[in-house]
Length: 288
DNA sequence: AATTCCTGCAACCGCGAATGT
DNA sequence: CACATTCGCGGTTGCAGGAAT
Image 1 (tube, rainbow, N blue to C red):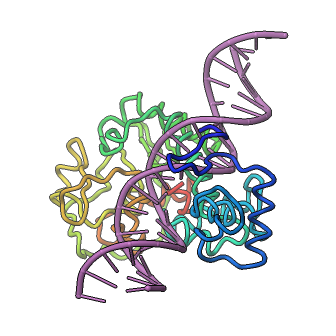
Image 2 (cartoon, rainbow, N blue to C red):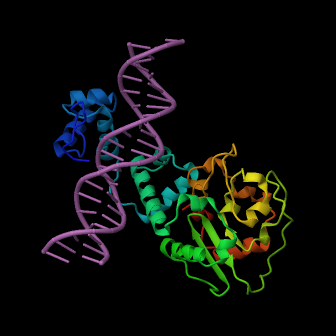
Image 3 (tube, chains in turn cyan, blue, purple):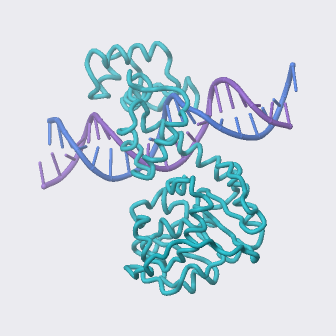
């Protein structure tokens, strides 16, 4: 993108000059934010109407806040993402001072870095290979993620390896587990729409995200298949694959609320184990 | 000091929805 | 009702400047 480039109809493209900003600001302040094509003509700007609108809405509007996101703002973005998914304009509507474009840039920037660090292909994320978590390579991967994203200190390192990251909490238990602590009894899990037929507690490891944010459509609804090797998550029609990352980020509507967890025969001990180990993390971190 | 790499972010593009004629 | 125009959104690109080598 060159600051001096032009479109094929002679309109200017690229970076805005101070003079152009002043012209646009003066015009919009006087005549208001409408009919952007006439703004570009009448304000003496050799710019596309869309470009004028974008410049005003994202930079010149007096309510636009510039600069990097504070810690509080980062947390707010996270909250809004869990609420709206990738609907940037809706997020911006509840985020005074920040535009949809700014929020989108912030989010995509983080996501890009995260992916590059992990060195994962999207296809890899389609697979939640239960066995491989015990192997070593993938636990190294989650360790890296853990350190880089959240800086979580290891506890009981000889017995547990767990991590919280994009695809949720991954936990690989090794063979010499200590006895589980005693927790108050809870009623047996209820069977609901998913009708998982086996106890998920029999897994040695897996992605906790699949427990909390579970696609309503789990191909085949067959725990045996899930356990044996690969979990294929698909959309409502059962055709389009859903990556674990996209479970939350792109297919928010297809996800079950954590409150629907009762559809699984999930081991209470296993859940408690994870919660007590990492209780200072909010579940919302799972989508980060 | 020069070069390469990385990151943030401004801006463009295509598309669908809304509105006007 | 049909078509044209405008608007707004989300995805993507690529520049600029700082950091690392």
